[in-house]
Length: 243
Image (tube, rainbow, N blue to C red):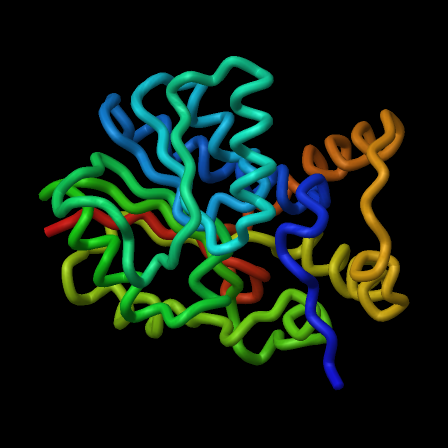
């Protein structure tokens, strides 16, 4: 039986690809967010949400995992982030009124869930002209043990992403991420970690060395920006505007 990771059981489990990807998202967010209400849909351990909170505005986070929600609530309280509000829930049934958000961000989530209801809810809860910033794995042909471990239901193509967002959104920017350096990293290192169950069965123990190595690799990954047009990337970054 294929074993997937229990999301929320290890909120500090992040690596260089996570840091790099969130850096790309923050760049798009800063270019499109002018204040107001912003939702991190599928916030996970809250690393992106806390970065959003530093920009100002009213920051909301939602995640299916009650473990993540508890962790983020406690961290926000301990670190004095009064502009963060989090709740548990499904993205296909968001507990917010229509047109409430100026921006929604969704990093590496839609591949795990029933994506059509989620896309409809994103469109419903965004204001007209509101912006969606989304990342997700690219290329069904790249399916591997990493996807099984992560509990993915699918990988996307540019065409399938356009189809998903066709009702309610206009994609204003589309790019790939993760070729060639990140793809090599996944093939030679991270896939081996997953196969050996180092990532799935042990809690992550933070250390200064691990953090510095992760930051260093995420810096090296910036080379891949030169190939954001290449379909061989491991993921995609999508910016879409509510019609």
